[in-house]
Length: 238
Image 1: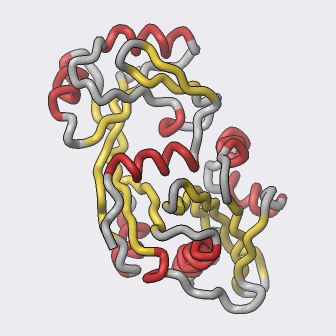
Image 2 (image 1 turned 60 degrees about the horizontal axis):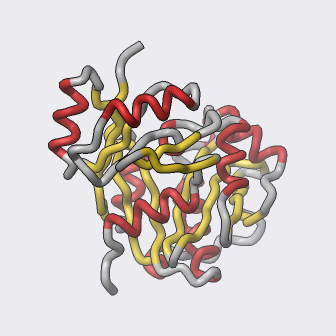
């Protein structure tokens, strides 16, 4: 099975975690994130010589602080932004693996796919810093999607969001209740997400995570997922 190309992974990332609106400004793609976080608010381009001032002006017009998302291969643009005072933040990676290699039918009453998300899921997300603006991002995703609510020790233990774009199922917003961490809940969520995605016809399971998130990355490595592409953001300090 041919591995998904970087462009396909980024398209799935955007398709399953979409901005409120997207428009072009010269060579730039500009996103109105509506408070949904960096991923839906960052400007991107494939032209490493693109005029930075054009993107800055477009983001200021949206009342957004200028923010850029770059693949690690875009070294020229990284250097240009650094020269303009933009620091590198949140270096991240996208993992992927065949759905069939991870999918596992969850034990009875341990994991449920639902949409819209239940109140308990919203509380779990909110406790982890995933507030209403990010839940609105999930609501904007088109195509097959589900919220995943996990149970462990007779209580709600975790929540996640999964959506499919062109055969790639992206997992977002994985959050486990602090008292139930290190008990296999996150693994169950990933395996259950793959099982659900398999039923939607997806061939790949993928997710994005910061390089610094060692516990999460250890799980993804243990599941046999591979780092496919690296990216980061550039922004100025306040």
